[in-house]
Image 1 (spheres, rainbow, N blue to C red):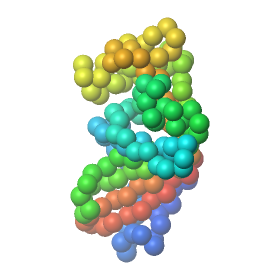
Image 2 (cartoon, one colour):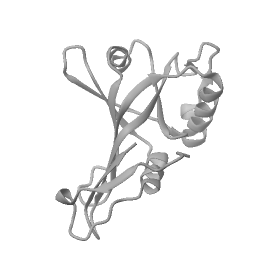
Image 3 (tube, rainbow, N blue to C red):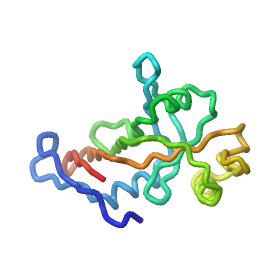
Image 4 (tube, rainbow, N blue to C red):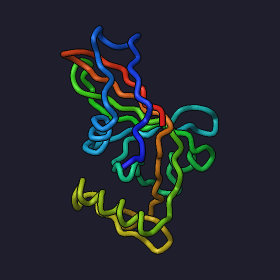
Length: 170
């Protein structure tokens, strides 16, 4: 758990009258249960690169994996800045979340075992990883494991009773 919740504010410009800011614990719960995420990185030529990933929320950060030769890994090697997005495609129902932060490779073996266990608990055998002694994931090819600790997050409540736009600063 975070030692302190982020500064949470409602942006009334993009919220229904009477809307309330979504508390961070509710947004964190959405991140914990989401099955698919979109990672946005920037290519060397400045164009965005977007790709779907599976991921887990562990100890106040988002984790995903990628092969070292994959485009997102090459992009992150040049610039760690990224966004992670999850939510639904309906405009009037559900909750969408955007995380902004830096994706950093983690090779801490005890942490990687915890993250691998979280993947197995969430996705079952489909995404069961082995932790290699070099600090990579194995089992689906060799993959780097990225940790995104958000600097900012945005939460978008959609539908009745109100639409809301919440900002979280860490």
